[in-house]
Image (cartoon, rainbow, N blue to C red; front, side, top):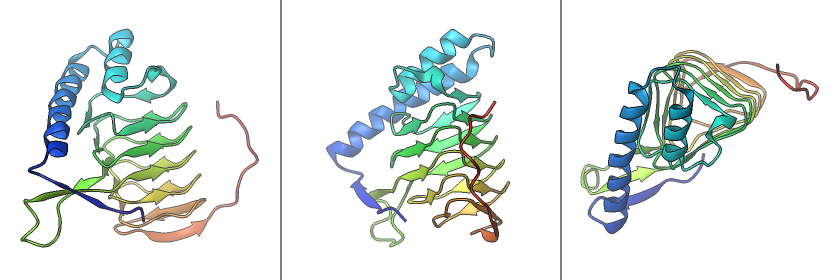
Length: 189
């Protein structure tokens, strides 16, 4: 698990993040209103949202929702399915050739458990999804989780702890089903 940090909600850092959240909401609302065939406008908006000069190296199917955008890094040929939500204030890194199925939720932010601190802070911890991972539809990945290369996350799974490489997991909190053997390196079609 990757470390969590706290951001005071009454701080200059939070005010800056809040401004970025407002910009991301504007960009995603424009992205989600575009005709699907308007590829150039979609790439332009995704480039601005992710602060990525080369957004066409990966593919994001609208509708798409995120908290800030600049906290997300997509690897070459990564794909993100329809209706995904990335709460990315803590940072999300998605490896090359990774497939994120529709309705997946990646959550890097939250609040402290202690009632006295709950409204005073936002907690953030990054999510790292390594290369060639397949995340099934409607899965949820929680803050601080790393998913190892070539793993498969079953549809609807809730992932609250690290997933080793070459592993298939399903269910809430995940149930280890089996280990996979590494494949010879090759280029996907």
